[in-house]
Amino acid sequence: MDNHIKNAELYLAARLAEGDRRPDLHKNISSVYQAYLKIIRERPQDYAAEVGDMFAVPRAEQLDRSENFRSLYERLKHGERVKAYGERKRAVEGSTGYGDLYANMEEARRKTEELLPVEDRRRDLLQEFMAALVSWRVAIPKNKAGSRNSVLAAWEKLKELDPDLSWERLRSWPPYRNCLYHNDEQLSLLERWFGEARK
Image 1 (cartoon, rainbow, N blue to C red):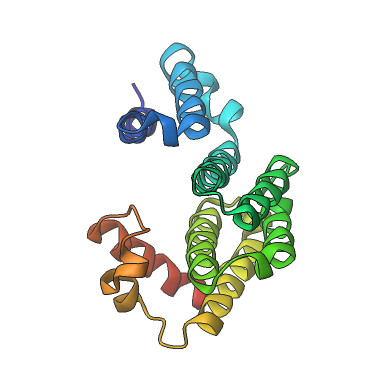
Image 2 (cartoon, rainbow, N blue to C red):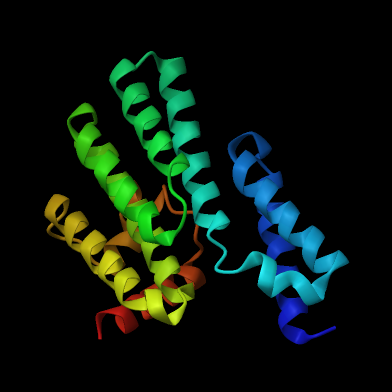
């Protein structure tokens, strides 16, 4: 088996195993990884063509995130937050590619910003930044410039809420570190990618 295909299979299986620890929180993304694994195991020659730019991954991650927060705030009876995350979920559902996903998410974030406290807005922007960074890294060449702009814009918006923002702060400050599922090695890789995006 081609090394790229084998590595992709190992990656997908590992990500699916992560989600399987809390399947209630990873419904959308786990179904994407299951579908990708099915293709790679049964028809590896079709994998690249069928998976394409892997847009289904960030879309599913954002759907899970919106649904999980909406569910949490429903249980806590925080009506304004339920409304905000419902609006954000609809924005993701209405997205058809990288070109409109982050624009739709940003528009929904702006429309619902007043419904959320600063802690929620900071966490949302952090997730938006991380998703934009990964999307820039995997973007096809014609989308690279637009994806790069999304990365830099998300970082600047986050800095507006936190003027002390730095990668060291992302690693060590509990309000950031506790909502990032990346380990230290992954954060170092993301920091390196960010350095490349800023060049």
